[in-house]
Each structure stands twice: as structure tokens, then as C-alpha cells.
Image 1 (tube, rainbow, N blue to C red):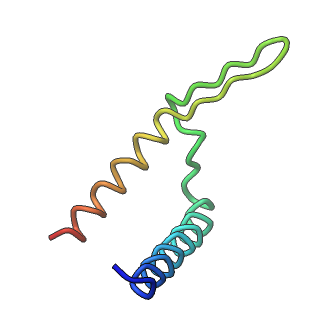
Image 2 (cartoon, rainbow, N blue to C red):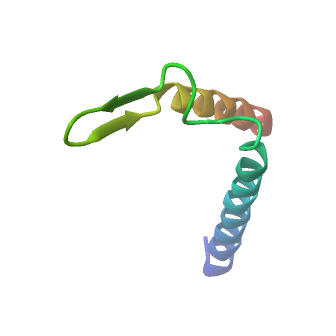
Amino acid sequence: MNGQDLGKICIILGLGVALMGVVILLLSKWISLGKLPGDIFIQGEHGSFYFPIVSCIVVSIVLSLIMNLFSR
């Protein structure tokens, strides 16, 4: 792999990440990832802890489905 191939791959990955960002911004009006039932939020006296476990699972399933579509 030479420098030109690596540059093309970086550009494609960057455009893909930018596209995902735009999609997330547009979908955030209707879908509130991070606030799904099952996400863990504990607020104590001296701080808080937040872990979006269900949101992570949903994103993982969606990305797995997308990757399976592209790999075939």
C-alpha cells in the first residue's frame, strides 16, 4: 500500500464519519439516543455516573446490520 492509497482510504473514512455525524444530527430530533429506558444514570451527593448501555446496544446492532449489508 503506497501513500496515495492510504490517503484515499483516510478521505473515504473521514467523509463516512462526517456523513454519520450529519445523519445523527438530523435523527436526533426524533430519536433520543442516550435517554432510552435501561440507560444507567446514578446521581449522588458528590457527583453523577451515566452509562448509556441500551443506547450502545442499539448503535451496535444498527452498525452491525449496515456492515453486513456492505460486506455482501
